[in-house]
Image 1: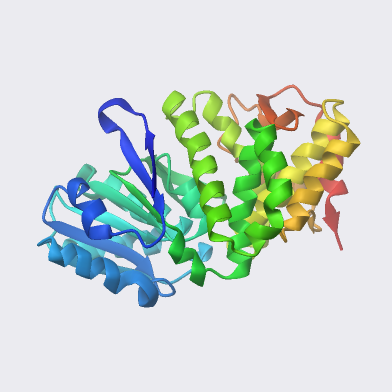
Image 2 (image 1 turned 90 degrees about the vertical axis):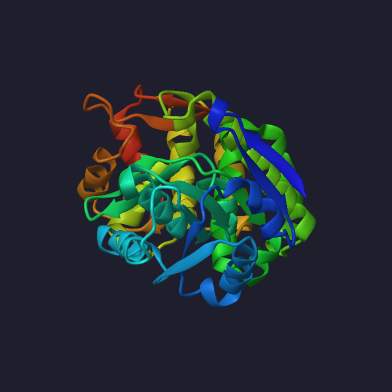
Length: 360
């Protein structure tokens, strides 16, 4: 087992990464009250719920569950309310813990519920997908989607602890594994050229589910995320770099309908658009763009999206949370392994980069 910490002063918390982790031993110091609400979904619950229920009950905890339908399309205010219903019906109080057992959707919703319920209760993350292990479970961003924009309602809510059990990836569908690798590639492109070389050397093994390689990818990704979050928790500066590919990607997700494309798939094509625009601005070479496309393709991810009317695409981009004072800011590449956030780009070139990476 490897351990990382997100250094946030008094709110410092560990990320445990390993295989067949013991939840009883690892969770005991971090669950403060008697009541635990496990939030999971209909796919994950039959596989892993009982394991955590038994561990918590053996610690003398009162355990209740809230099982949601599976998918991004349920990450909305109606389904968030089901978590509040469950907490209230169970009679839970302010020292309860909400435990997220699932992927990014469950983590985002359970975390947001924990931030709101009685103005804030404890939160624990047990991410069961590669994407949630490398990205969404770390750093405290929680929230839900709105018809007009992705992740538009939410709160910063740091967990007490993150348990990333690699053994739970054994049941993860191939498509979801690839979606997680999209966020892994993101860390390499935005800030670690050596990691990009490592991914190029090891992508076949990662796709082939080599446990040691996956653990290394999770560790390196979480180390990047933990460092950036510690420096800029509320995204006043550097943390925005973690949105590489996300402004374009969120537009793709929103237009196609949440869940039609997985978040990681949309981010993959979004990163291609960002690289393409960076090349049009003269920052990176066309060889760099091809290298970006190649590593994304080797992860079995899309490098172009279906035809989307430009005005609608731009409309969704205008709702992006990085828009400040009416000015869109994008995360672009000065070189592979060095991203910047900038408002200094030619909108016409941006339009070309969007249109050049659509098909059909």
